[in-house]
Amino acid sequence: MSPDLALQQFQKAAALDPKNPAIKTQIGVSEIDIGQSEQGLARSSRCSAPAPIAGPTLAVMNLHAQWLYKAAEVASALIKRDAKNPIYHTLLGIEYCTTGAPVAIIALASRG
Image (cartoon, rainbow, N blue to C red; front, side, top):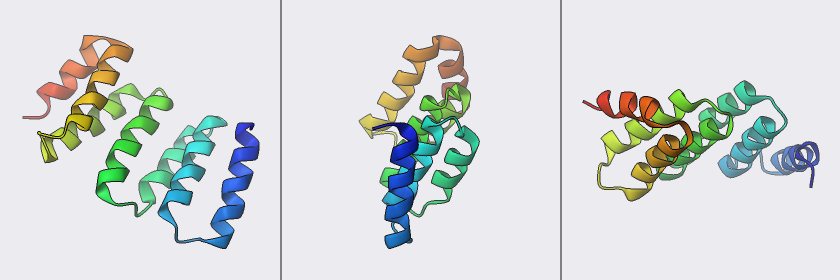
């Protein structure tokens, strides 16, 4: 399925269930896929998805949009909130593997 078609399908689903945060998040992901990164991230960050889903989703979406500093920032904030959650550390590790040390080190240093 093409990204444009996926966006259209999620928009139709949102018309049927406009309060569903998962559908809104998928619209945001689809917008990123078609090159509308800022709009997609803005839409997804406004979704009222539960925190355990919204934070990692936002980090992954930032990675997908190639906004690596923002992805590291989100992952670091998640780690600060729950340092024992391995998923949050994995997200920061993915960012590290994508860019190398500089961005991840800056993010780790900002954790305090």
